[in-house]
Length: 184
Image (cartoon, rainbow, N blue to C red; front, side, top):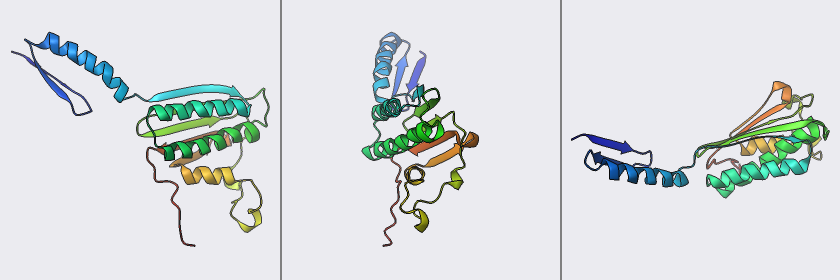
């Protein structure tokens, strides 16, 4: 008698002997089809939009919906909503100068472990290190740099590359960020 073993990452295993394989394999196929509801695969989104903030908001909501599908916490969703709005809006307004002839490309990969988003614009780029610290005395009353500061506070990884035209953002599931320092 041959024994077949099927094991799943959820810790469930079945032993099927050759005499019960037909029933067992039928059960396994039904079980596996239902498990996809409980173990969603990574979800991806790849879109190109004109430099229009309304379009940017729609993409942001599509990514949030993917996070909800993967049952991310409200804290994670808040952090990404804030970061997505900043990143996509910056690409539209600052990168592409609100030029509707220029596009913004957004790629998102949402898994059960983390979310990774890439935002590309068709602008001239910039040097992130040249953006003033918005908490410095000379810049405290100016709005520039606050979006970058917020993204760095809420995300596990933030990187500008390709001359400042590509933003990569990552947030791990249940990240403790931002960490608030209560020294005051």
